[in-house]
Image 1 (tube, helix red, strand yellow):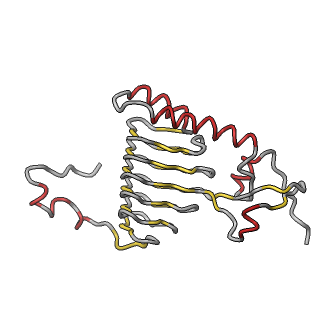
Image 2 (tube, helix red, strand yellow):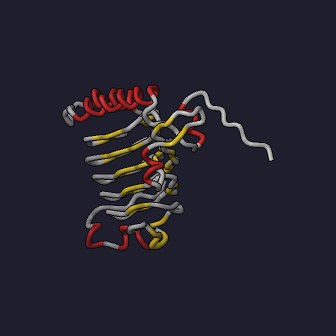
Image 3 (tube, helix red, strand yellow):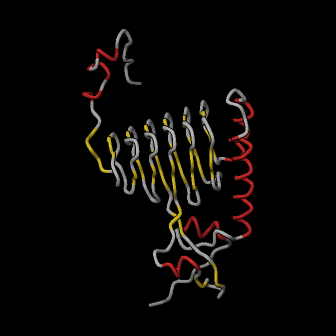
Length: 222
């Protein structure tokens, strides 16, 4: 059997391929330094400095849709690997360790202290410390898996979303959950690790809670 040849132009290509890469690589370090400094700039703005905040987010993120708002403080790792859709809201302390790609759909709302992580480190302690690269150098290596979140999702307070997870459209993730596996669309999931509790249906509509609905009305679904 012929041995597979691994050829990559840079560490970014290794990240996208899902193989081990060196997070201390100078090119990657420069991207992270720029983003970390922009995080600080954002976190020093006032809430009503909306135009300034938007300009900083446009510089940090790969994409940031119209009508989005992030309360802050923020902590993006690469930033450019994250793409966020329209009408997004994240409450306080939004953290995205986006070594691999992170995508978030339209009309998503995140509670405070939500964390998304994509990198994975070796389980064996000695392998976390150093490994030998294909060129014979000894370096600290890790790998990463992308995270994808669909449209119209509500992610509760202090949720952690782990590497490689996909969350389908219309999901609700309960506060404090740790999401380690895919969640199908229109599901309520919660727990550590998060498990699907049930499907979200018409029975969950506010029309069945008149004591809370009061004199408000439910709009027809678009």
